[in-house]
Amino acid sequence: MRSSAGRLSLILLLTPFLLWIVLLVLLPHLQMLRVSFQVRESWDTLVWGVEQYQNFFSESYYWRTFVRTGVMSVFTTLLTLLIAFPIAWYIARLARGRARGLLFLACLIPFWASELVRTYGWMILLRESGLFSTWLQALGWVDGPVEMLYNDIAVIIGLVYNGLLFMVVPLVTTLDGMDENLVEAGYDLGGGHLTVLREVVVPWAMPGVVSGCIVVFMLTLGSYLTPILMGGKDSAWFTQQIFTQFITRFNWEQGAALGVLLLFLSSLMVWLGLKLTGQSLRKVMG
Image (cartoon, rainbow, N blue to C red):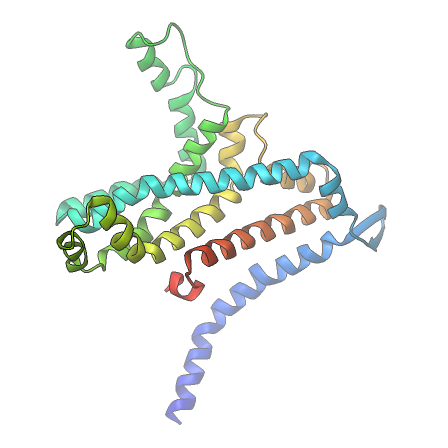
């Protein structure tokens, strides 16, 4: 009786979560997959086919933007990791008491605002009449206003900023549980700072590294606001093409195919990351 009651309680607890996953994740993706294999012969006639995927490979603008988005997302993820790791190390291992809480709060506060507000904040700083341009002119380093927006560097700055917290949190959680004796043993055995970092710290932090990289990569790959606002009209990001097909051209079949391809790319990169690091999804997520 007790076992049956426990099983029933578990089912009741999991039911809302499972309904959420099925209704808002699984079914929409299956519907998108189905629509991607439809070809519209006329306004009221649909047939099955792979024309949408043929269009992707035959038109260079599609697949070049697809590859470019993937490469920039990987680069952004690695840059975010390089910036976040020293911050996480200091918070987890060096900061004490109130200072630790304040540092963590400093990482968290920007995310009390929406992505749109954060992006516009960077646009105010980087625009031609913005703060950075004004400082450069005041220091005499430039002769006139400098436009720092509407290029790939501006897009990467915005994406790294938006992903920083999601990299810091899993790293802090992982590094906080590391035994200090392991680091001391590495130094006692003659290892230098880089050796201890490579042989002791990084392997221990690997679950947090992989977890943070997965989240940041997924967020970066699927980002829409930051590339279009900070990259300008010449910025080529794959989510913009999906938006154009769905909203501007009302070509839901082509938009669904591009969405499926983006989902395939994200899943492939996550699988490759897990394989290359020797991690499992269960270990990374828990």
